[in-house]
Amino acid sequence: MKKYLFFFILLVPISFLQAQKTSPVIEPTPAGVSVVTTKNSVTIAGKKVDYTAYTGYLHLKNDTGKLIAKMFFTYYKKDGDDAIKRPITFTFNGGPGSSSVWLHMGGLGPKRVQFNDEGFSEGPPYSFISNEYSWLDKTDLVFIDPVSTGFSRPAPGENPKQFHGFNEDVTSMASFIRHFLSRYERWGSPKYLAGESYGTTRAAGLSKYLQDKHRIYLNGIFMISAVLNFGTNDYYVGNDLPRALYIPSYTAAAWYHKKLAPALQANLQNALKEAEAFAIGPYASALIKGGWLTESEKNAIAEKMSYYTGLSKEYCLQANLRVEESRFYKELRRKDGLSIGRLDARFTGRDLDDAGEVNSFDPSFANIDGPFTATINDYFQRELNFKEEIGYNIFGEVYPWNYNNVQNQFLNVAESLRDAMSKNPDLKVYMGAGYYDFATPYFTAQYDIEHMFLRPEQRKNVQFYFYESGHMYYIHKPSLVQFKKDVDAFFEFSRGK
Image (cartoon, rainbow, N blue to C red):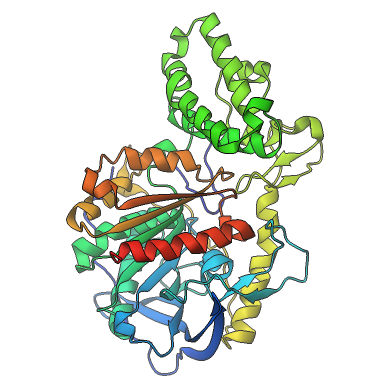
């Protein structure tokens, strides 16, 4: 089933990165189009951090000097420190087609949307609070909205399709980074990328493109809820691999909702280890056998599948041992009249009736949509003093996203990341995942890394971190606290300290 929702991937048959188009030129904002500057502070780990926020645009021009787009950004720079020694992190979200609102107001920036400790919205009107877990004590931050998202727009008369594709997006984002480094004199700073969901796809592509095209070498990349190889992430008839890799996520969700047998319910980590072994062992073998599977083998696998997913053996057999995740959302708690969330399986919702095959909406997205939209607009206007007549596109109209660079294959940017790590042996990679995330399941990210076949000295540069939350694991207070600890440790690790 093709997925068009944000934070995910529109999968079409797609060959990997071919020759790139000419990079657009980004020039400093001309007179009359101002960047608004404000000053503020945030307390992190008991220490006050004073910072300056720059909110505005960089202009993209083509080779003839014609304006083709304005790219919107928010840049936070800690006051007092020598900027050349301070790390700088370029951050963005996914979609494709999402603005950077989620990382900006969720976990990284100096303000965050207010949720209760479990990550549940407390209802409108929504508000934001100071973020004591911001990254600003460790790095300066640049939140980038790709063209057609946020306030970023193509210039009048320009075809937006020139920005809406894997190659097109990597090219324009790389140009932004290159010219930002010049405009704000940050070439000598340690450089990082932080992407979420399709933003990790973008970050992997950028890791290679920035090196090959602009000779920009990175110190580290934060992969937050990663998707690197589309072939492991989305199920099509004939592509059974994602079915196996999703099983541990089914186990995690079933564990959270107390649908597993007592032996598994006793400990999440033990349950996941068992589910992972089953997924890449007997279950994967059964899927490969297909029609060669005997009835006795099929029944035995269905029994085990039921044990690790909380679904009935009969339902597993009816689905031919291949339960699509969209069906799982509805089936796990059907008897309770509830469906579970896709972005975060901890959340539940009620549909019009209980007989449907799939849920009618994602309750985990409904929990974050209103709060993030309201607070980012309020924040820009009242705190950053940035006034703009056009609307802030939380999600831009970017479809169909162009994957012509990879015809007849699945996009696999893990190979771009491997290439970048080979050429830059100092590049470190943070891989973060929430156990209850079905948009980018944690086990697929592990599979993708282990199939990059990194040399031992390269593999030690990739570190995994897991959280008992969903896609945006930072909305869950205990995960946010751990996230900050892990990020701080990763910055030290990436600098060789």
